[in-house]
Length: 256
Ligand code: CIR
Image (cartoon, rainbow, N blue to C red; front, top):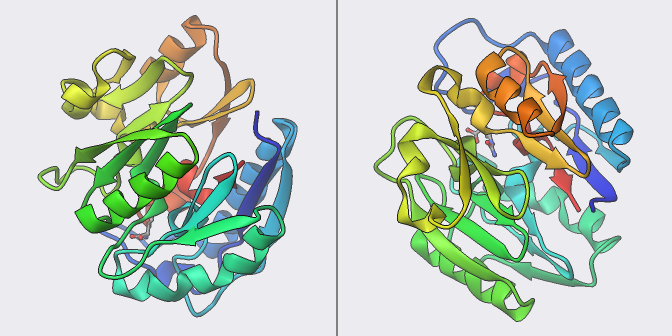
């Protein structure tokens, strides 16, 4: 069960963050409204939400999931792989100290973005990506092992379609993974029941189990229907402004 979430409100220079999206830039007022609705949804799922102030030095800092990985008894401060995001971690140490006694840090030359880390109960899938290198992944695996977790590395460097591992896979319970087709055949996921997302709905592979609910982006009826048939209680949320900055539902919070 999760009890808490940490979020960071988008700053007014949010549109200056990194983005591969080529359309119109995000609308700040809309982004704030969507962020508020996201926080309210987390509260309805039973979480106490810590809202951090915008960090104007780091336009991508609303994607707070990328700066840490949280386990049962420890927090691991990430080391973001994008230069412009490296120092974002400075803003998460103090908030995490209020909740975690044991805090580790990924060290250079390792890099790691929290968006590459998919927790499946006592096992963590660690994506090796354009942001997370093998060194960072192995450091994380070692920290998690001390806490009794197993982990496996999933190399997604050859995939152009996703930025982070969790853009393509989500764990909705201890045996079921929501996964985009392109990842479904991966050896690492063998043994799990795979709920496949059709290519047209790939964005919805980044859904988030929060206690009794699953947060899902609006507008993806096939995967939404499939999850509902399986008995999941869905909370549809519009995060279109964050999508324009390559972000999804999971990256907007740290949950623990
Ligand atoms: C970035 O490129 O770093 C941000 N614009 C988006 C990060 C999204 N984070 C995530 O999916 N975990």
